[in-house]
Amino acid sequence: MTPVDAIVLAGGKASRMGGVDKPAMVVGGQSMLDAALAAVAGCARTVVVGPHRPELPPEILQAQEIPAGAGPVAAIAAGLGALAGCEFPAGLIVVLAADMPFLTAAAVDELLSHARESGSDAVFAADASGRPQYLVGVWRRAALSAALAGMESLVNRPMKALVPVDTAMVPLPGVEDCDTPEDVRRARTGAARSAEPLWLDEARNVLRTSVSPLTPRQAVLRSARGAALAGPLVAGDALPRFDVSAMDGYAVSGDGPWQLRRDIGFAGGERPVGLLDGEAVRIATGAHVPDGTTSVVRDEFVRIDDDGTVYRLPDTPIREDVRRRGEYWLPGDEVAAAGTPVTAALISVAASAEVAAAAVRGPVRARIVMTGDEIRGDGPLHTGQTRDSIGPILPDLLAWYGVRTIDRVHLRDTANAFDEVLAAATDCDLLVIVGATGGGAADQLRSALDRTDAAILLRRLRLRPGGSTVAAQLATGAVVLGLPGNPFAATATLLSLIAATVEGLTGATESARIMGPLVNASELTAPVSRIVPARALPEGGFRGDLRLHTAHLADLLHRDGVVVVPPNAEDGALAEFIPLRG
Image (cartoon, rainbow, N blue to C red):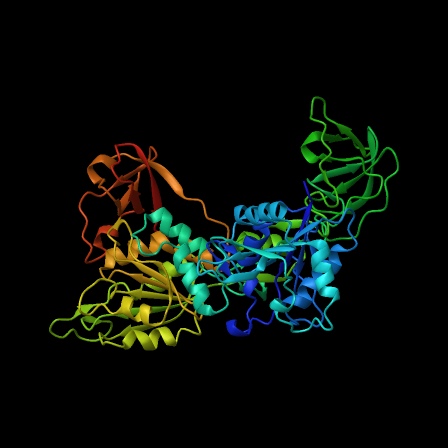
């Protein structure tokens, strides 16, 4: 079979996208560049043309059109030049732009099949309207080289100038490109299947995979709790930096017995001079062992005579008890993968690895929006008003998941109030909105989201309470999490979705769920998932509350958390438990 190479165009000016890195934008859980690379995964060699991308594996070639942003013709020429030095040049070359999130390997295979059968110089895809997509095609290498050689200039030339006479068109699905922010929003909305109510696990997956993550930034790690690593954390120095004693005892040379010297090795102190065979020196845990050390013998394993002779006690285990340089890691080793949350443990590991700062995404900055004319935070209640009982605690709930609340506002029930809130969401990453998610006369959030052309991620949940929950991503990148107005429904739904939302925005690895048997599942279950207060049982598992009041949080008093009751469950069924942390 004729070998195939691939040129993936991942540069350009992206002028209609505000200059953002379009191939890196996420649609349907992967970047558009990753989607393009997956579509050509079967090719012998692939070259990506555009700005250098250090995250790409070394087997993928990289090139840059000259000058940068000089258009697709110049980029194709740069890609072909990068392939010129390869052994056994392929007869067919796939040329693909990295802005089609739904293009598949099967579609590329169909183009290749037509190219082999037709003998045409080039075969291009056609979209659903019949419009040719010249940046989704298969070229004969000789024809592509000849077409480029015949052009006086390659800079800012249209693709039509490169297209040969002998071409064929193949209608294919998934070849609609994303040239504008609206195209991307439409694609994300389609990827999220947002028109249907989603099960909780489906909604979490959408939030993790369909949200565009935050832009990476360089940050001092000890000040970035709640963020996640945007790339691997690489050790700046070895650990241990030198051979150290693992225990308090005696550094010895040889099999013993040993003659004890008077000097002592302390952690952080001066390193003892080298040992000769048969010598020993007192040493503390963490001290630099002297040259010639064969092992450290623990204090409890030795006997010392009056003349300073050190003997190993009979029947004690033979252990080295020396931590060798680089035993944990060496300079350049990966000590934490991309996506690792910045926690106290990571900050400590980074300090041990002599790394103070790293590229991170986050932490997430949130604005809390309480809605409703009937809600009052401070001061005396007037007729028809009720106290805001959850607004004051939402910053604490968000902080459990590393989210930093920048402010909390109260929104009155007016027709266009949400338009201003959504338009102003340029200084935050997350809008947590309580209320106005239903279909009542005062519930204006959904229509406001539609007016902003937001990418709707979730329209409703198959969850009680919490069915009216809505989630979207604005053009600014801020995620909107619209929660029901009832205090328990808002709190329980937030607890069930916030981890996935943070993971989507920061690129953090998916957190593990706490699972266990729900002893009274049969009396709690329903055709859809339910979320109820629960106690953790001493013998293991959980017991959920049969009675539930959504108008207040009294049912959470003296409870350990909430439990997600599976639909149509029997007693003892595995259920997810979400703990209350404070």
